[in-house]
Length: 190
Image (cartoon, rainbow, N blue to C red; front, side, top):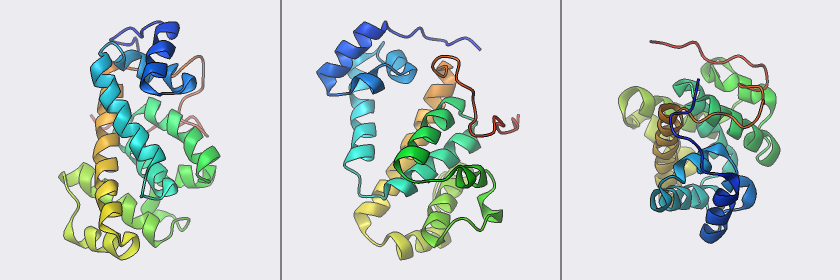
């Protein structure tokens, strides 16, 4: 499927990224290069993404499990692809756990805190909010109010990012194979 908005040239993206304090690798990705058609907006979007990824209070592993679950449930190929690499190389999520995220309730690979945040994702996707029962589980395992707030912001943020990526049809870079590690994406529910 063809992207709806053409990426800005790589050199321009790298220059803009440098001005914003965004590294060359990140600025060279198609998501940034597409959103950079609106420089003021991309500055703010990437400001939040950078905060959630580098100055986070929520455990990075839990954040990546959240993102992978959102990528799967929304069918966001770009989000899944990019965060598969981050999850497996930077936060220690195994390829087996990535596959298990697809039907996490049937898996024994996840502990109580992981199950709580995955349930929070599913509640938010299904009902627009986290239920009282799931919130109590999250409170029990995440404890700190700032961590709980960040979890909610992370869920909402990556749901929004998924919608942006899919609506703009941002393509995966190069000829990379989608839906790692096995190439199987979710079945569309429409």
